[in-house]
Image (cartoon, rainbow, N blue to C red; front, top):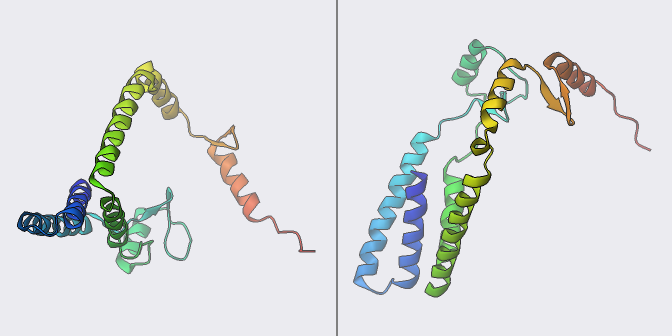
Length: 179
């Protein structure tokens, strides 16, 4: 749905900017605008309010919750984190950016598309040769992470109990007075 939103936004902007005076341009612009609105509606239906933000379960008063029952309470009360106007605000930004790109001359847009295509091909070709998974790295990482209950803090390995103690001691440390 997001892919269709991007493609139809770019097509609409391109047609409105460069071909707005022809009948063909008006028809294509109308079709593209319908696709933009359809994909926006699809995105709005897919974007459910998240109960996890930043890797931790939080509600709006910044306390953390740990149980599934508390999650259900948060979801029913509506006090968990919500992004306002999601996904409309980000989609408006995407649409405006595509409209600004469409203001370029057609030669510039073509050059941009060739450049982006070339960079994408380079990225995947380079990644195929140099990826961690292609060099046997993922299997070892998965085995070690299954056996491990610790985390890395400040470049040093710390088990979960020490990490929670570190977080508590940092949170309870008073700040020095201002001079």
